[in-house]
Image (cartoon, rainbow, N blue to C red; front, top):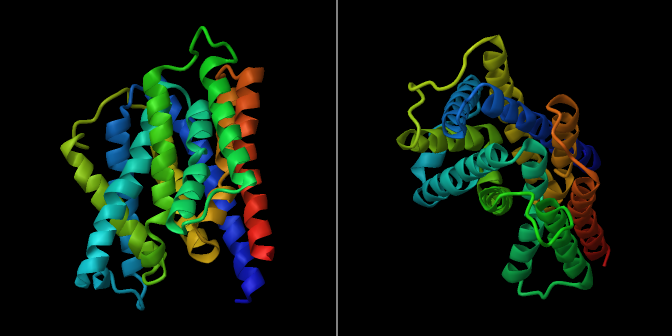
Length: 303
């Protein structure tokens, strides 16, 4: 595949994955609010099921060795760390943020993640942030301020726990984008994602036993969970990590700005989440940080 075609494929995978994540966030909110499904149970079932399916698909391919990653101690340690602090952490913090607020707000706050990626890159390369970087940080802070306060300093419109989980999901999104790059360059994405999901979900059994099924069960519940597992987990996580492999963590994180947009639109029009002028203003400021960082990255590449 030509380099330009490969990059186009990477762009499509990153944007498509982010859009599906946003829609699945609205489905999760529906399950939490209307069907009393718990975030802990959904995360456990989501990861174990999607991870098992991915590994089965990988096993069906003749040129893939599922056990190779386990034969190298350094790679084994990296896989376990990614499974817990990347895959599991980004899943749970995001769902906890949705359960504490709503899909639109939780997803928008999570997408301050590229700012944390930018800060990590600055520290790891020993380069001070540029003017564009400082602008992105100010825009992200201003966006969060509007979402949390509605522009009023005397009253919070978002609970402290919702803000905590939102910021935690942003940090874990950054970890999820950065930490597996070395492994992605060595092993097939399907194997890495499959093992990470299975390990992360297996570890979370200590928190929520998947056999203890909560909530109200009907066709809507089953359909919502099936959508989250297939179109909100299996397909987009595989596609996104492939995009990271092609484009790198920073560019992939920037393209994922499609997630807060799709989550906000679906939550507002389907779940009737109140999202006023200050909410949209905060959302656009946060999405704008992604564009600012993208401009800075493009300037750096061209220099």
